[in-house]
Image 1 (cartoon, rainbow, N blue to C red):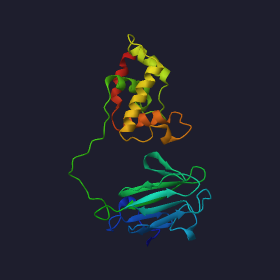
Image 2 (image 1 turned 180 degrees about the vertical axis):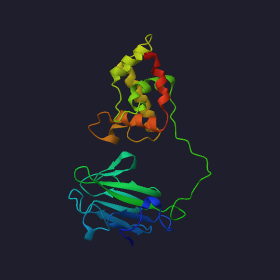
Image 3 (image 1 turned 90 degrees about the horizontal axis):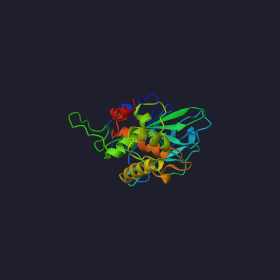
Image 4 (image 1 turned 135 degrees about the horizontal axis):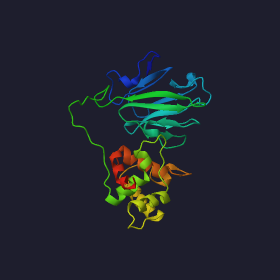
Length: 256
């Protein structure tokens, strides 16, 4: 284990040439780097004398030993051993007792929840197969996002249902099933639209995306109370994958 000083530059800028799979961990208090090896560990938390990486040492909401990096089965995993959750990229949360999450090669920022609105940054960087930064790929073709296939009816229902997401509302929420059915009735007065019909369409698409590997579309994946979480996750996936895009709002023009 090698120590990183408090003057070490952000890991977002990369790391020096390293053994493939080496992990770097850095906070305002300094950090460490560790080469890969079965059973390797890095602890982090508030209690500087008893952890490898100190984070949030003046914040009593941060646990003295808040988390752990562990090298198992050929990769690094992060676990939460503290009282408050850890926020990962893509708004994913890791709570105490949950299954460890694997770290990908490259840069990963973790945010340790503290008191009030405070969050404490723990930067992580896993060296890729070439060691250090991942190989640059300036001239490679851009990989397009995975867009999900929707029928014309599914697209119409989901555009109405999720129009606030396409309008970039600050905190969007889906319309209710009843509201969606009422809008669809205005758009297609010759058809029968009910809340139940809308629900069937949404459930079918959600099940298809879940089977395709999208996380957070099943009750057991989000926990109770579910609220609007399943539909919020569905609509965010459809927008972020560019399956639904703002020009799709043209389907609502008949309401003008």
